[in-house]
Length: 321
Ligand code: ADP
Ligand code: TRP
Image (cartoon, rainbow, N blue to C red; front, side, top):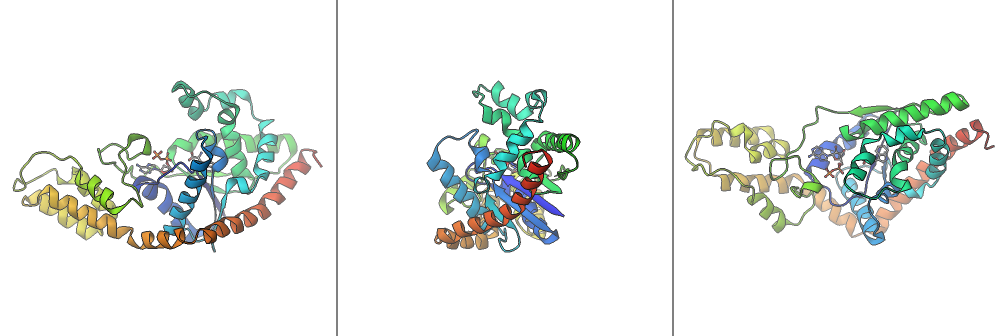
């Protein structure tokens, strides 16, 4: 059973990314073989600045390693270090109908927002299919927004097998609808694009300021709050503090007598402590970037060993050899 997923190096990760994507991926390591990569080729469809790409790639690597991605167990690499994926992209592209790509939501959304389309953006789902099919992947954990891309990947694999004989593993998507949408500082879905995030590894003063700045209603501390379960600080506390602690704060808010300032202070303390060990690990890793680069290089070698076998199979089947 091989699990694979890609992470775009799109900047600073936040609590929503951690709870929705990173923690489940890290936990999956206990259940089988995991292949995780940083999708830097994909990032080129939206980001042009080379220094920013380099920095984001390293940041994402540090974040994942700090949060528990185990490079001994899992294969962790930078997508572009295994350029075989671009050859498979070409092969798969010749079997991908234009209509299929024209129907892609992500492409349609971006062009509708006025982003000038280029070939890379249009071909994005084919590269993603190649990412997955190049490693004989069985399961792909992704967010709901990637459902259509996964259906396209399956379609493309089936088309290849029909055209050239049974060659590629047809993967399954693992989409967890039940994974809570983590609310941001304004109560909307936490998202980089809404500017409402709590960064995972933000600096202490700025993080405290953000949390203390959460806007609440004007009821007095003494007033009982029967709607305590809907309070944003309580909801966030439930996600990061021990259940008994979160329940205790909720009870005190409901009963009256707990001020919002004290509640937010507690939220900050628990948030800070929750990531203390990961923060220390991240600092250690950041002081030894050669080691991080070496992890990615070793990962790329291990990934490449699998990729070259599958690509060879696809080349043979399609008459390139
Ligand atoms: P963003 O919305 O901040 O741009 P991405 O689209 O890059 O985040 O998401 C990367 C991963 O993090 C996806 O798997 C997505 O499902 C998950 N994720 C992002 N925001 C949240 C959230 N608020 N709650 C739960 N999961 C989230
Ligand atoms: N498109 C995915 C996203 O935006 C990232 C990605 C690229 C990916 N290649 C992949 C995810 C392969 C899973 C498998 O989140």
